[in-house]
Image (tube, rainbow, N blue to C red; front, side):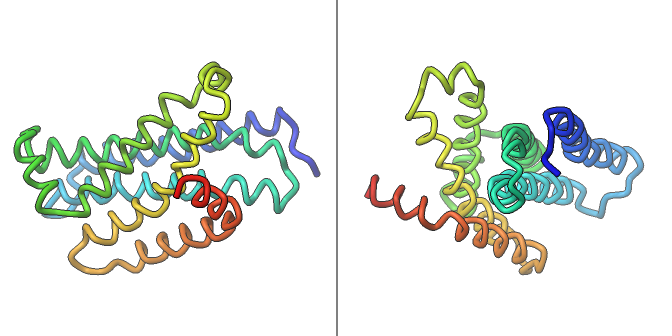
Length: 201
């Protein structure tokens, strides 16, 4: 059965809820004291993993649309990408505020000392540009440049899992699984990635 525009509207609503309800859960956990002894770290990890999950969900849309022959599924991609950016921004804010107290000089020194933070910042900056240029109006204005900009999501798919893996003192099976999923989603696009590499090498 082919999805209709009406089906897509309901699917978008469900995806909005799936991305927003975890935020309500986080607020409730903070208010009720359900977090661990190091609440700041718990918040950072929670927001970071939500951003990573939504990144993977965004990358999953195109393969699903092709495999299931549901072209209208791609209409959900922008929604997921914007939620990924929102959670990534929460992740950065939680680190900047709870860990560093908004001390920009301390942030710069941390970036120099911890390579995984550089990976995270680069990923976030790419997401910022993609979020700003995600409107249909800018897509029309930028034309071919728009696709070039949004192809950088594949770089984020490499850097973000690495950032997550390198930021933990104890290797997490969950993060390893996310990294493997990201690699598989990139492998699905290997022809496109090869063309992209050859164009800009």
